[in-house]
Amino acid sequence: MSLDRTKPLLLPLALMLALELWARLTQLQSDSLAPPSAIFAALAAALADLSIPIATRDTLFATFAGLAIGSAIGLALGIALGVSRPLDRLMEVTVEAIRPIPSIALLPIALIALGFGYRMEIVIVAFACVWPMLIMTRSAVRSIEPRLMEVSRALRLSAPQRIAKVVIPAALPRIFVAFRLSAGIALIVAVTVEIAINPIGLGAGIMLAQQALRADLMLAYLVWIGAIGYALNMLLIVAQRRLFGRAALAGDHP
Amino acid sequence: MKRAAILWRVASVLVAAGFIAAWQLIANLKLVSPVFLPGPDRAWAALVRGFSSGDLAGKLIGTLEHMAYGWFAASIAGIGLGALIGSSKMMRAYVAPSLEFLRPLPVSAIIPVAIAMLGLTQGMALFVIAFGAIWPIMLATIHGFAAVEPRLYEVARSLQMSRAAIIAKIALPSALPDILAGMRLSLTVALILSVVCEILAGLDGLGHWVLLSARAFRSADLFAGVILLGATGYVTSIAMSLLEQRLLAWQAAAR
Image (cartoon, rainbow over all chains, first blue to last red; front, top):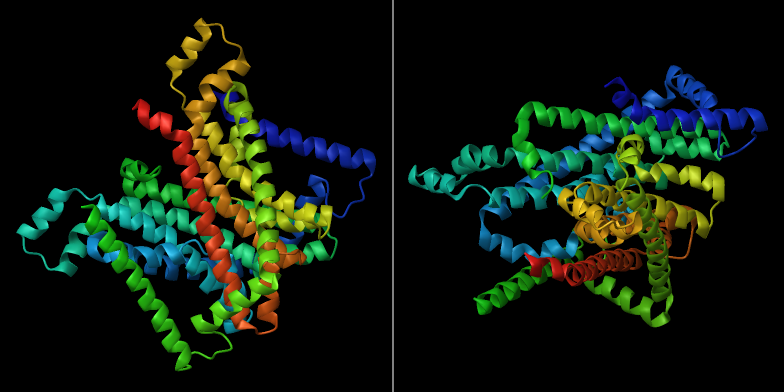
């Protein structure tokens, strides 16, 4: 049992040890690599002088603001298109025409319209989050047990009541899965926008460290960004298990 | 039934045309400053102008090249590594958890590292695109290999097939749907990373084109570039689904 637990850790530990030894033995002087000890020292220093915490706050603020706006829009559209088959058919071409635009392509448009800063980043993150939310909510709503809809009709619920009392609760586990995927996308898009152009947050921090030829700090940022991504994903998986139990797993591989 | 489907399609196109008309109206009435929002007429004119002068076609080909090279490299390496890891229990136990840990990493964070190692070059773009696109393919391949019906392996053992033969004749075909789904995902990743690399490194491509247009406030050219990027995403994903149908036809028939 204890061996099974340690197995996954062996490879990363061995790699780090090898890198450390190699860097020590060759007296490594590099703009792109640094021994793990130096990386963790740089990480600790950047955490202590608050540069990484502040950058994390900026990135996460843009991520969550964009996620909230984008998934709200995606949820509303997804429910509308899922409930009403005619509306879905009418919007099909429009949705299929806009959806494949890579979110990052909107970057220059957002840049000239909104300038640098949070607003531009939030708009792009929101755009990226709308689509997975829309597509998965639509299919979740459409796959609701038809008898539930019959019951709601027999009870003469009005359309808003039907959506609030039947549609959303029944589709919620799969909607949460969509939300989890969107959250991952939101973080990726936020960091990408910062790396490409926006001078705030973790993405800008890692670019700055690269331009300053601080390989240790750059890799410290990389490790930190990876940890944030992992933590966000884990948090949402735990929340999903807590809230919905096995019900949510059904929708994980649509 | 068929007739109704066509009618709905026509109606749907009309709705989309209505949105474009509304866009034109907004632009004509100057509700949004024309500096940011050109009308569809100006965007279309820029598209035609760009293609007739050959500029835009060159940029489009540049982006497609980055995307295709990176994606092919990622597909080959991803399927190869995925097969290697997925077909061995030991490798799965030791390596797969590390890969799962790396999966939620925003891949664009590797760009600065790649720039530090390779400079602002085509090689850097290729490395970043391949690195980003490899994950969905490799993880899907590992998953597909792990999910192969165990009785098929038993059959292979009783036929005394070699490991290479098991991979080629049993595991790969039965993991094919997973692998193709992974390849479709990484197509999108490859397009996005191509654009980002072009923006950062000034490589010849649509990403560079839209950034330059934005800097010069040539909004019509900018929209032309964005429309082309959308079309690229659309056409490649349709091509991928055709390929999927083609390659998986035998499976649908077997069911």
